[in-house]
Length: 232
Image (tube, rainbow, N blue to C red; front, side, top):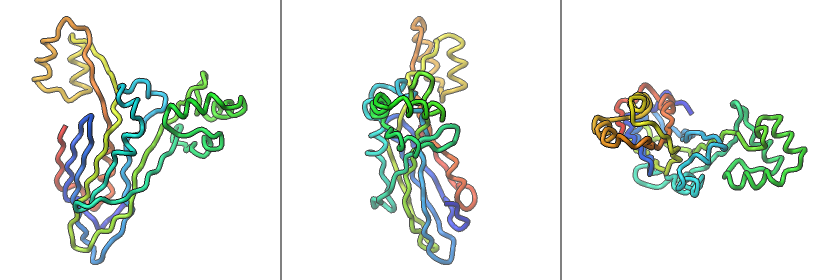
């Protein structure tokens, strides 16, 4: 929900493969209390990309996001709800999957359900783009956490949430000049990292892990974010 009365005074965002943690401070400038539906989307992922996820995340997918997500307001835990949807080209196909008794996730349950589909349902899902020519799932999974938040008038509150992210990998690149180009374009690489890369010459590949984060939700508040801090 977009608000013209509530400003985000600050956002402190910490990103790591083991945890994403973000802390906001909000100020309600309205002359009365406001109750707003707050939502926090995590980056969508393509269901058929999961074999590329690092092993520990395959074992935990998607339980680590559901089980680890937590919200606190002024230091107190807050209950939340979860929305899970499947999309193809921004079309919601969640109901279609449900009609075929195919879950949106996790991938092991999806694959098990597809194996038991009748040819009619398989062709229907292929026609809608939910399955590829080989009959493998290819939709995107979108997860959103949401709760109703009360903002007292003329007051500041602190909202904090954290979760274990899905990380992608392993991405490999050569340690030659092309490797340096790739690093500089796609990763946050320091001089220390480059010196370490030089010490690994002779080894053909290095590996990386990637995670995503959606920043555009900061546009839903009054004015720009006054103070933003990013820790990687």
